[in-house]
Length: 289
Image 1 (cartoon, rainbow, N blue to C red):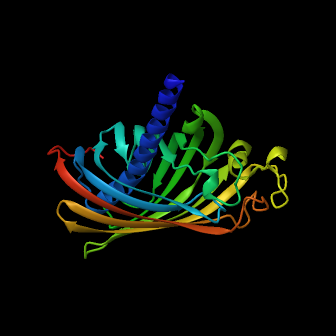
Image 2: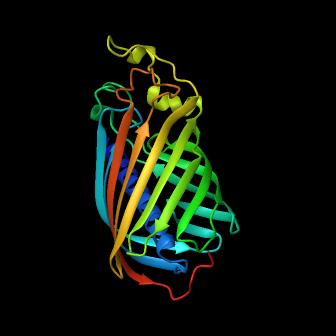
Image 3: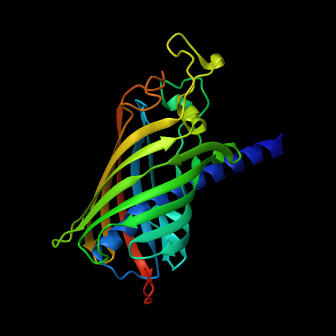
């Protein structure tokens, strides 16, 4: 009994640590994007501290949000092949001015069923790990102040809270815009559509017979469009070693494959975050990016 309790405690602590790691990786993505906008020459590595506060929709279509905040040391590495930046960590296989192909991972925070009225009595949504290739098409010259690009990621999804059980696959083509303004402000915006297979859709929207209630009828999710996303961010260097970033996202399930699910309580939802990043040290060597 004691061993079982200790094992369960360690598992919960490990999952909490990984959730925090994924939150930091996501925040590092914004930091790296801002660095790329501010200057074309980036250090090979950088270490510092980062503070993150995020409120996000529990899942696309949920009426409730979940929150997370933490402060933790961070590191960015931008090698020719091995990379920890831009919202993920992994291996870059191809890099040209117009095209990049990388293989990496990212993650998203889970939520307890008790956090949402619609999912009361249903299983929790675990911390999800996404892994797979991404093709990036740079539409603008490398040194241009205004940048346009298209990202085409394909990711398998696994549940960290359930022994890395497979949950399905998603593809999220995105058109991205960014601008480096002369006054020091940096802006970016993106429009994407998330398509998911039946397994991934079922995680959020299926209601089984033993989960049905008078207000939550049985529903079988199907593959197709999960959500349309509009994202934006702005940043400003408060000092030579400190950056402030604010980002937000609107998710819409209007016209999505499973909009009729009883677990969909509103068609649009928002996620908002603030990042404060402090650079302690960085390499003199520059990235070959």
